[in-house]
Length: 548
Image 1 (cartoon, rainbow, N blue to C red):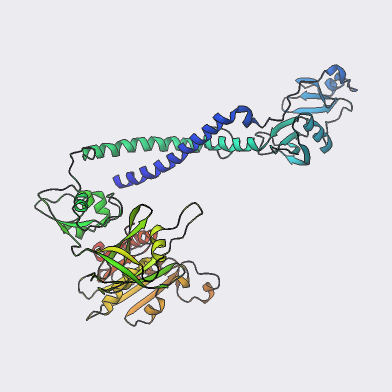
Image 2 (cartoon, rainbow, N blue to C red):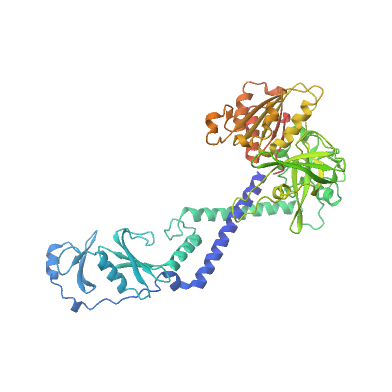
């Protein structure tokens, strides 16, 4: 529950920050622009009603009284010097030509004259268009005309056809102001109202943000996070003393990389983060996340990867495996003793800092040759840069050097057994799975291996020929989005890879299977749920989520 509250608190804070920035920017716009600048009336002349004595109607008002006895009022006005009766009924208003006694008619020429009579700007009429209301005029949805004027403000004048009256002036400053009002009021329907569902939701979000913030603050105070004399977490202690431990979430308990084994008479109780990231067997064996517990003299810390060292890697070869995945092969003068499935932490120089990125080795153990598969992360838009780590690595030239720390991780093969080894992967998750498969197949007594690999298109099936030609591996590629033409020629499985695995598991004894899963977070989440639904024992499942 606390993890969910932290997650929701972060996302709600992002939403509120964005809206506060919108309120601030639109409020400053209102302050500097002023009411007149936003009104759209810069070139609008407010006319006084004409003297009715000069109108001289040919149809007397008595005639109108006899024709509309139910009228609540009959008033004489003038439109461009022509008399007009405004007859107000209980449920309608009629406009009558005072010279003919018939309904008032406004054509495009008259509409243009009426519009220009209220216009004081330097422009000329560009066009007159018949319209049925306009989104720019709230509440006006009857027939009329839009008169476009060529001037510095892009003026539009709306004239009502039934009454011959100018409804509104609009221009570019008004359009900008209208969008500023929408952003400020969170009213994207254009109703110009505070009373709507979106702003109610914003209020509830703000209330939730405040209350959850107080709860999280209280928890931090209770844990002593604001105490300058508080004990460091085990992760902080290990990092400050230079001991090898991986972490990519900054101690938030979400990456699951900082595993350690604790020994002592009284081990700390597992936290919610540990229950989510570690299996019951791991917890019972004393595994904990070092970021979740403070240093305790009564507890001894055993590191999972004590042979970690820093090595300088030199790029020996590079090849494009798929349109989005590049294979990089490095040589190393230092011997790196790693197990299949483990990863190295690359040190990526970026501006004035050094970033760390984790990449799993894609081949069985070879201390002087390391192969990695790197997914190129393109920029999703012009304003968002591409992936820093993948861009740097993929732009390396042959002979370039880079530092890496490792090996880390416990995504390794299970101990010898007769159980079937099931591998489920997707995307760049191919790397550790390929290393595990190679190691298993080269063992003295290889266990049965079944490999399901998901990709969108045929061109994204990494190492397809290698797996199809290997007699010891039952390989099933799955396409989720076959390209045009592939759907007709592709004879293999389609859909999501976890769905194909679920069909296969339905005919298997799930207690005689070891499972290894690696792939993008959505695929991993769906696969873990599928395995739980299929009743696969949690202790038989090993997964690697790239530390995301």
